[in-house]
Length: 186
Image: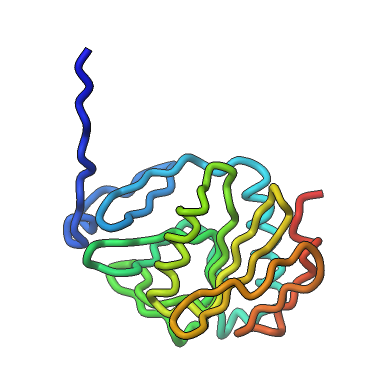
């Protein structure tokens, strides 16, 4: 039996814009390589729902967007990198939209970790978010019931604290303080 190695296809921003949307799948592009991700398993969507609900309840919808749907956050056009964060919070006046995608940093990005996600994958996402100037990122682990908070310092997202309990207080949105225990499924 002969094994043939495949080379990932690298797409440009312009090529990507002409491609059909993938139905029922989440697609990210990292350094021009399209990555199709399987649907999330429980408890992932429950944690996303609780976090989004808590943020929406406490933030002013006239000035802030809390996205928890599948949307494209373009990190860079060359090589093309477009992420799909679980939750992104934007001040409306900071959003830059082009070709139907967002090309500006959220003030807060939240990634709910999947068991299959490696530390390398997590670090790659954090480097992408810091490259566009995202001031705060949370890595939420439903399995460990922990939230690691990263803050942008000197151009790097650095771990500021890991919460098991207590209050999550977004740096840019202190009015949206959340009890960490309230985000876990019952």
